[in-house]
Length: 369
Image: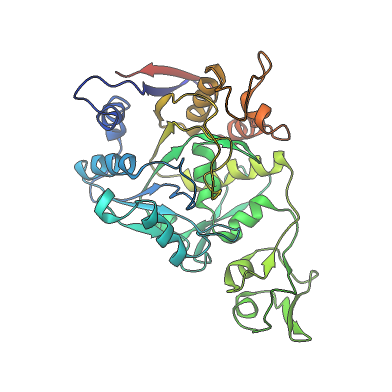
């Protein structure tokens, strides 16, 4: 596969200019306008940030992208799916509250927020994965698959499981319904936490297509022999009493994310932007963020999510570390992401993404002033 073009603008701005203007110039130079946006529904996949975390992307970036889409005739909306873990974004009501709290509202961005997998994270579409090795189908938030065009706007940072979080993670993991996130994170089947279960006998029983859930001594019980491991009961429970702690290996997690991203992107136009600023050690899903590990670098954009992520990895690894951060003074030549999270290996994500045809790690970096 030929090298993909990745467009880059640093964080420098001339007097009377702005970083948002530079972002718009990058979108123009990258020819995002090659996509026919006219009268098309355009999903802009974003991470609204877990409240308490301050390194998530400012809504201004989303407004700049949405305004560009509207100028090109599209109908954009901001979207994300509910989280698997219990927090401030695990159902649509608290998720919308979190988005508003962090400044994402129609008044600040000019577009609506839509939680793609619905109220409880169970509104999903099962999508075939062309070339999937770990997964043959993906459970994706329905609103994301209903869109005609898919754009991702990503905060590039470290990640405690994947090594880094960029376009592939935001597209793959972020677009999965709660059951889809379970399929990526875990290899086993869910279990009921008996101390949390109220014995209501309601949603979890109704959501199970395998008749695997029953009440035993007034508590829900999952028959592991009947359970298909779909994870829909996790989203259905109002009391967060169902979990799956059989976590997948780093390689399996990364590979599944790449396959989910391919399910989202196959057979429709897409474009991706990574903002490499406030490069925190961990995901924006945390209700806190540690200090940035390198200085702010810039804005990267490409039609190829693999080349985009690889360009950002290389840029972060080439940057001087901030010694007062968790990185400290790393060993010469040591990979920054693995240095922060030694159990991770981001290379498995890039390698599998290339293997299944999601994109290429070979790129040509084009500077935009």
